[in-house]
Image 1 (cartoon, rainbow over the protein chains, first blue to last red):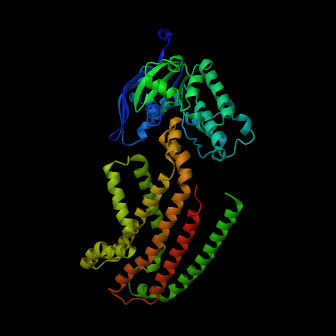
Image 2 (spheres, each protein chain N blue to C red):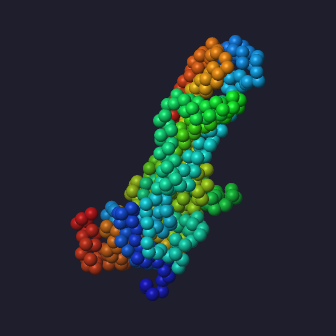
Length: 257
Length: 244
């Protein structure tokens, strides 16, 4: 299978330091087009940092230094001039729900608007589609003009997912999206993610603390520990009785972490 | 904003305006007593004409301060040497009591020229403007920076992650959130400016003493302007009470 898939993101020898503190120690792996890649690992293992490097939001952290390269479709992201265009290609869902201080409608329409879309009918359609995909439409369709920050935590999290989908990204990065979402809604979103991967041909990077979630969704899974990539393989192998590293087995089975 | 808050704010504002008008009436009345004295013998401007300049000058200083704070906070990284330099200077300047500003203004801006040429009234005016700006700007910079900083980083990050440019992030997210804070800061700077107005009268008094004796009305003006400053800071506390 690996031979005939296209590489979407190519990460080679990526090192990140916050001041003197290392966050990633030279990791290299590829993300294939149209796959769901699960990224698991305990806290402080560099998962979020990795996502921030890809969409270049790490630049706002003043003391962070990045070495090595991250290539998206063969182009090094650090050399891309149109960083806003790059970020529009990548949908990002942050671990804590951050409702922008706008109405629900404007929250979802924010990204298309910044990209220059002004047509009301098209915006309406995008907002409805994204909210439906994030399993939020039924709950908010009657109060789209209410303030997004007034929603409950789980609803706000789904709002951020709808927002991340609103600019039709090629890559969707989810950073522990289910942290404030109830199990039933989580299942509904997971169904949507599978659908996005198979039908919309989206590449999905799923950072998660729920090991079972990676097992349910991911085609391949990467295990991070203390800024090192311990192992990356198909999910079946990682969750089998004999992954390449004993420590992976221990983590996956809840023996530590 | 809920209704009770709107009512509360309106009452505060109306009370403020009524009290302010009352004091303004008092100021206007004292005007006739001392206004004649300096204008009678020369082309020296009265203290009142300078009083009318207070508002535009302080607005100018506040605008400059806000712009400066935006530049420091949004354009320069925290590690930048220029930002650190300015921030430490601002910290020192906000700590200096306004009386010292008055002394410094007289000492630095006025003495040289006034002593040498004797035609010191224009200089006195520029001394006032400069003192004002030096007095109001640091406070505005500081409060505006604090307001901008209070906008949580995740909000900026998620807006940037959606592909927004810096201008879009600022105009759509940061400024609406930080606006009450910035307004409260400006109000506070304004109240300090009004307190300083009393001090500027002091500079004038010093100027008068070169040719005439201290007019009796000036003392009451000190008090009036200080009262006005007090009212402004009361209003500021009402604004501050509304966190986002």
